[in-house]
Length: 356
Image 1 (spheres, rainbow, N blue to C red):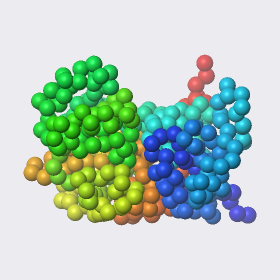
Image 2: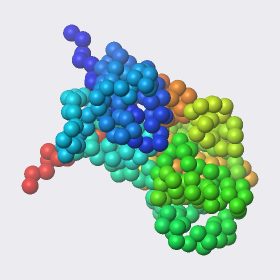
Image 3: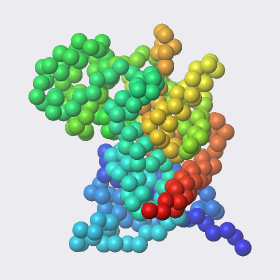
């Protein structure tokens, strides 16, 4: 008798600016999940937050949007409820409303196992400003930065501009605190460009980061695990343009990669150690891609950010780094699913022992 296939609900799309990237990642995951072991239920979330069961992520975007969507919100009278039942849920929702702890909280409320980081780790990693604050407390080296709120900018533009010009040498990077995939990021070379860069970033988020530019190499490391995480070999990305922007990541694809990166053993080990330290510091679980800068003149390492639902396209660094570290894409997906079940089992054990 053949073992029963594990039902995996692959959830993609979503309300964030990274909607299209999610479709590409979900397509790649769908293709690489072992169909002999897993039965895949594909769930598409449109930009308004409506859910719909579809044939697969391979369906053309125009067809994904057709049909009747349903909601899980009980107060929506016109909601169409469709039964969705799976053994484990695999969210591939980059950015807000998917990578920030919101859908993870939904799974926790439902008491179901899911892939990736839990609520706290997801929420902290999504907010680059909070991440940097925590990592600084843990003595993990981070890039010099300034955290700005939109209200500060509106009330005292001249003061903010003066502070930036005084504390930073150009060029600098201005970015939203809660978005990924290089959405809303500007490299500022001239003082006259700062205001426009801030306006762009504030369009996407109420909180913005101004960061020092580190001249050197861009490195990434993949982390996998729960209580005892492991780090992959680091990789290097060599941007085609001045930095690895959205267009190059998902449209042109002209940036080149070195996997694994050509680094001294001491640097490799330090990056792996810092990756695991950062992963644990924000109480992450399941997976994360950790991004670094290696300064050209000093060889100092600076941690940039953690991504708890990193890109999963065919060229994305997270799965590629595990491949060069000896773990194939299909086996990586199986491991992530296993880790989701393990965390749920541990959580249930704790709940069952508590008797009020």
